[in-house]
Amino acid sequence: MTLETNWNQIYEDAKGWIREAGEEIIASFTTSFAIDTKSNPNDLVTDIDKETEKFFIERIKKIYPSHRIMGEEGFGDQVEDLSGVIWFLDPIDGTMNFVHQQTNFAISIGIYEDGVGKAAFIYDVTKDELYHCSKGTGLYLNNEKLKPLEPVKLSESLLAINATWVTENHRIDPRTFSPLLKKIRGTRSYGSAAIEMAYVAAGRLDGYVSLRLAPWDFAAGKLLIEEAGGVCTTVDNKPINLLDKNTIFVGNETFHSQVQKDYIQPALDQNYYLKTPSTK
Ligand code: 2AM
Ligand code: CA
Ligand code: CA
Ligand code: CA
Image (tube, rainbow, N blue to C red; front, side):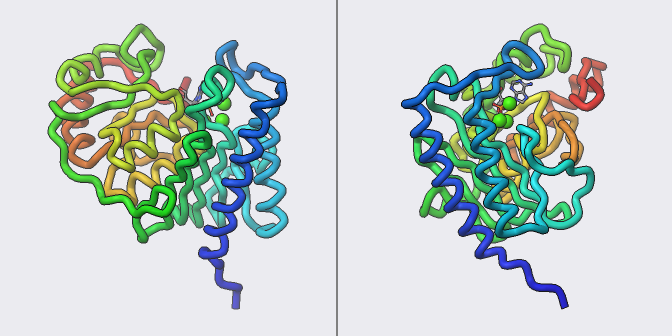
């Protein structure tokens, strides 16, 4: 007989480690840290991203040696399948905000077993807001249980989108979303996919779109949103692949279905271009 996985313990451990890591990150504000670039001059990484990732990996591996970790900074495992327990870890989501603003960044952790979401945590460190859920028990902001999402009118909705996707770019025809922006109440851009997804789950936003996210960016947000009754797909309305980069479109159920039907599908029908990040 195999030992039953103790999800309550994993949940409590993850919450404790996240708050501890958050304190370390805030302490780092008073010291100087090195800033490097990755794929391009605007793709930043700091020592704190790397140290925070190592902090989690050390603890997870010590207590749960059979679990695997897919982390952005590459100190975890080379994950190529979804078997067993996998922690999708983004130690700092919103590194550009961390560097420029020292706020509006988050720790994002989604835990899956055999591809099924089990627990999710998005911690807005400087606001001390921890969005969390375990599958089937509802969504929490710190100790407060949040209400499931309710239908919303398009004309009264808020969408998070980066201006990149409605100006000239290589991934999506800017004409895809621009008519929607005229219809809805407003747009926001926080610069942290995790915070934007947590806000959709909490009903502070009705939708969020991004054309290039990796598993550590969306694994936790997807679970939180689904737990709140929202929907998470690729921009062209396909299921998310947890092992690859994806385009992402998440929202309140009514917002998601209306935008798919009245804006995205018509754009695709007109052959407006849309490229998934994995195909480049
Ligand atoms: P990061 O800060 O963890 O890198 C910024 O628009 C949002 O997109 C952040 O959540 C950021 O995550 C994410 N992102 C994903 N790929 C990116 C890239 N190549 N360059 C900048 N931000 C990226
Ligand atoms: Ca990054
Ligand atoms: Ca990220
Ligand atoms: Ca990151």
